Structure formats: C-alpha cells, structure tokens
Image (cartoon, rainbow over all chains, first blue to last red; front, side):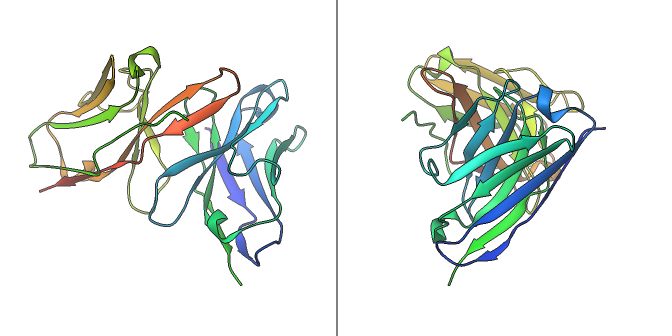
Amino acid sequence: EVQLVESGGGLVRPGGSLRLTCVASGFIVSTDYMSWVRQAPGKGLEWVSIIYSGGKTYTADSVKGRFIISRHSSENTLYLQMNSLRPDDTAVYFCTRGLQRFDYWGQGALVTVSS
Amino acid sequence: SYVLTQPPSVSVAPGQTATIGCGGDNIGAYSVHWYQQKAGQAPVLVVQDDGDRPSGIPERFSGSNSENTATLTISRVEAGDEADYYCQIWDSNPNHYVVFGAGTKLTVL
C-alpha cells in the first residue's frame, strides 16, 4: 500500500527556514517523480516543486531561489528545504507522487510564517 | 502563464447531474486531470487524462476535453460528493510546470 507521511511543519518567523520531510512506503521514491503542492488557508492548490526520477528538479517561480527539493534514496524520503520564508508562504504543504498527475497525496504539513 | 478558469460554485440536488467546467486557451491540446478535496482532507484524483477513472473511483465520475473547455461530470450526485473540485494540467515546454484551476465548490442541496 502506498503511503506518504509529511512532517516538519510549524511556526517560523519571516526570513526563517524550515525543512519538510515526506516518508514514503509502498514504492521507491528515487525511481519515481515526486512533487510538493501547497494550499494557503482557504485558497486553492499551488504546485511548488518536482524532482524527477533521474534527479532533475524544477521549481515554481514563486519560490525559486528560496525552496530546494531533494530526496534520500536509502531512507525513501523526500525533502523540501524552505529558506527566506515569507508570510505568503503560509500553507499546508502536501507531498505527492506523479509527473503529469498526482495519484497519491500525504495528509499535509502546516507551515505558518508569522512574527 | 497559463490560466485555468473554473466557476467558483456549482449547486445540484441529490440524484441530479453536476457539470463543472475548466476553461483554458486550447486546453484540448493538454491532458486534464481532476481532483476532489473534501474539507480538511488531501485531494483525491478522480479523473485522469481527460476522461479515465483511477481504480476505485465510481463510474458516476466522468470527464471530457475539447477545444477551450474541459468538463467534469458527476452523475446521480450524492451528499458525499460535496467537495471542492480542481482541474489540473502540466507541460514541459520549455520547463516543467503544473497549473491548477482555482477550484469549484460543489454544493449538494
């Protein structure tokens, strides 16, 4: 059974950093395509970043230069390093699997950026 | 950047058919995917590649895509179908990007 479990969310001051973790089971992260998608309170879904099976990464313009997606093969884990956080980064961050579409989602991790 | 336009809300009585549109410039050239998100939960893929249903999704959910509009159709609507619905496309030219519509709130009367 495929499962994705996020952790690492919390309250952080503007300008601060946070790292989200997504532990996967039921498939191998390093041979698949993995993304982060976020949802601000009361708002819609926004794609954040993807890492391809071959290791190539792409990031949305809204977070480019501040967020970095990576993975740890032996731990079957996906990460999102978030730097220079801003209040408008406040959202639930979902870990998802897929390239063209997202067939499995984690339960989400809430990140709140506030002073 | 590419924009997907959805109506903010759709209302339908139980047992009737709900239709949710997703507009975009020449969207028929893309594969469109639809997600259902109930309050406080993660999204669930309900229609992929314009009109295919993932395993476990009821036959009541169907989709189509042509020219400038993609459509999600839910037949014989049930109270449990009340949720937000999002359309989504992706492209890789020149770089990978993913676009979601703003979402449509389906209310079952």
